[in-house]
Each structure stands twice: as C-alpha cells, then as structure tokens.
Amino acid sequence: MVRQIKVVYHGNVQGVGFRYKTSQIAKAFQIVGYVKNLMDGSVELVVQGEKTTLSNFLTEIQYRLANNIKLAEEVSLDIDSTLTEFKIRH
Image (tube, rainbow, N blue to C red):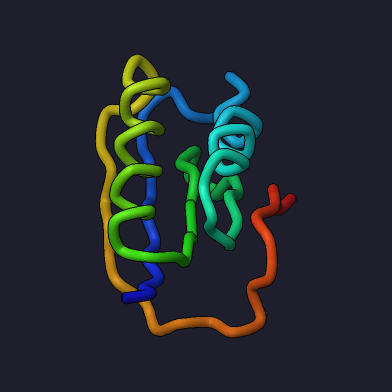
C-alpha cells in the first residue's frame, strides 16, 4: 500500500547537513519526495512509497540523525502523482 507522509523535524536540523544526509539515506530506498528547510528553523520531509519502506526509511533517519532531532511531527497526506524522484528543495 502506497502512502505519502510529511514529517517536520525540529531541533538542530539546519546548517548541519541534515537535508544532504536525508537525501543520501533516501537513495537506499524506493521512495519519492523532497526535503527542505523551513523559515522557522525546522526541516520538512515529504515522502511517498510503500508503507513498510517508509517506516524503514524514517527509522534510518532517526537512527543516523538522532543527535539533531528533538521532535518529529508526522501527518499523512494525499498521494501526489507529480513526485517522480527524491530531491533537496531550496
């Protein structure tokens, strides 16, 4: 079952390579979406893929970037068929 989620990460997540590391982790998973900095100092991740794949991807982010993450807020979104790859958005 394919789903799309948005996760907003709070903590020490800007200026530390968070988006780059997230995009590198994404290469190991069959997912599409993007990661971008928000004006309030948080980072937004929008990702789409199979439920289990998404769960494994988010677990890997939490494992590798735990020292930077204080809070992760997750919500489900409608599927976006225009997403075709994983990108860093500026």
